[in-house]
Image (tube, rainbow, N blue to C red; front, side, top):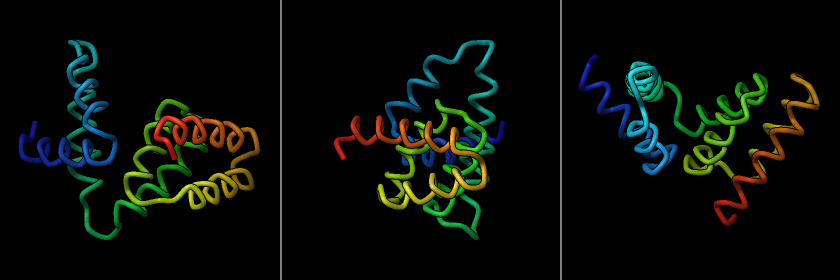
Length: 125
């Protein structure tokens, strides 16, 4: 493992998803999934999320659309929260999911709206 890249990824991951979630994910890692947690932190958050060329805000737009299209509700919930932390507004998130409805299907968008509403309620927004 590249410790510098892991630490950089840990910082970014905490800033986007929240320290509470990230710390719990790492604390609850066991022999089965620890390698996956390290891989995600190092490569996804340490390398790709910190590349030049796209701001975090733009990366959040992309993630919302892709994760909604893939119908991954657990990840979508995390990334709706991350998108808010990265400066997206509720209206911008709504527009992403309307775009998802057209290009990926109405059921994916309906689920995405439902999940986003849950996150907004949890965040008090």
